[in-house]
Amino acid sequence: MATAVAEYQQLSPLLPPGTLVSYRVTAAPVVDFTAGYRGDHWSPSWESFFCDWRRDWFNARIEPPSWVLGDEVIAAGAKGILFSSTQAAGGTNLVLFVDQLDAADRLEVIDPAGALPRDQASWGESPA
Image (cartoon, rainbow, N blue to C red; front, top):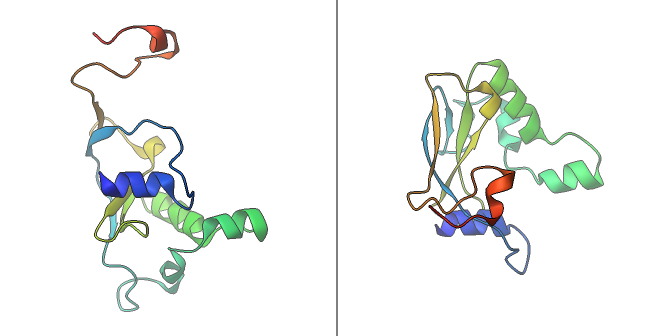
């Protein structure tokens, strides 16, 4: 949970309002980058995976290297990238390219009490 909160908060001094949701995910293949960059295993472009994408996109007006790597992963047929959190030591993140999922993959929200809205019209309803 600490990783999810730290990733959501990012650089903000205050935690903005939001809803955290747990998922059960089954998707393959996924690129495992949790050990980070190693020159003997990854192409040199992966050395820039943890770039400051905000600076690149908003200040330098260039496509961040991590986005280019995401495109390469998709082109190679992978459905996501598993990597270590930069916001929470010991935490792990999964970027999932949901447009790449197929019938064999599973992405399920964990909501046993039915507290989350099912669609736009159900926002005002009481949980089931």
